[in-house]
Image (cartoon, rainbow, N blue to C red; front, side):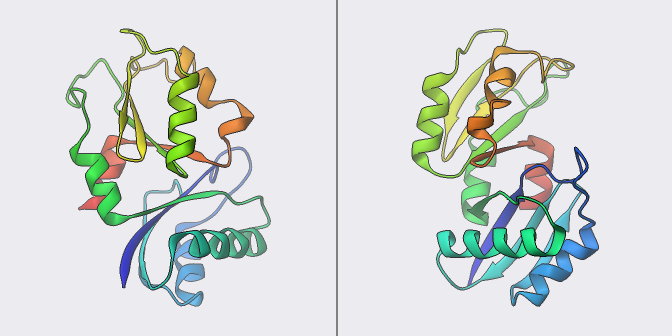
Length: 172
């Protein structure tokens, strides 16, 4: 069995409400072992046999049917998430900045996102293993050039962003 993390995009914001207990129940009913949810932002760690792409498709369909919304997830193994956490290149303790990890559905998405970005000292980004690291100044995570790039519809179904502290909690 492989340990996976399903990172749901767009839940508990904008009118899409998914309670953690209901989310955990869906994973258990779908036959996934050891399902645990983290925070209220759509993070589920679980164990499963099977290939990631097929699991992703099955989970998105089950989420859409159960909760009535267009479900998008980024599915990573726990090992991939730990590698992303361990490789964070910025000072995570900098109180003036917000440490983020942008998870991408696949390497091509990550490369396309990086190519479309305009990194700067004020809005730093860096490539990582299957992710893009980002550390904008606190209070500006919707105003920077990279924030505006991430908000484009192109990225809605293929990326999701988590605070580094959330990633650490999931990996613990």
